[in-house]
Image 1: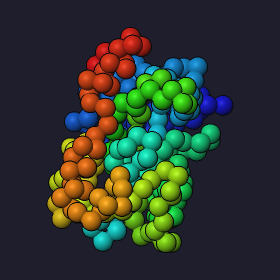
Image 2: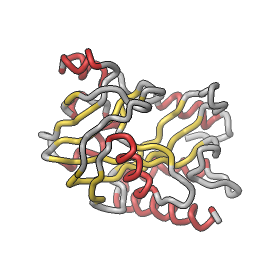
Image 3: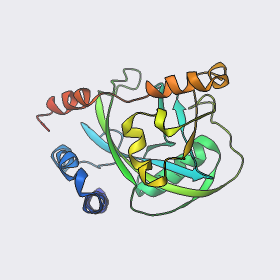
Image 4: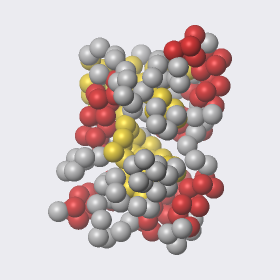
Length: 221
């Protein structure tokens, strides 16, 4: 029954807010998005559902991917399967998208990011909101292999070239951290300046777009 699963995830978000009180007001609007009759992690649940991402740290570098459908710079991650906890989904998505397995460092996410997802008419999905729980992983094993069905190419980008929402969970990891990312095309991997330019444009929908999605469902915040 998804009700107990929902409770576990709500408790997890509450624990994150307790550890990061500065985010409490920002994340409080999440409570108004939940439907008591729906699985918080189901892809079909709108206006919002929980997703999970992996922040993989290795030698001061963090692995990221470029999503083919969204055309956005992302941490490896995605939707949560039935019965999965978010950290389990993050580990699975990391393996599926990059070929790597890694050790989870903490079951408490290092960041929770709320961002808008545009309408996808091919999948008959309305515009909605992802509440993305981001988990820290380390000590990867396996061969790095981009999944061609989901991502495109690899390049290195300094975190200071990323949008603030992408850097937020990395602040505690040190200023010298660099990032491995997937760019839009192999040609773009040849130039760090181009990669940084892509990263600077790699934000999800703006805060205004997120609020617009919420407003259609009677939520303000």
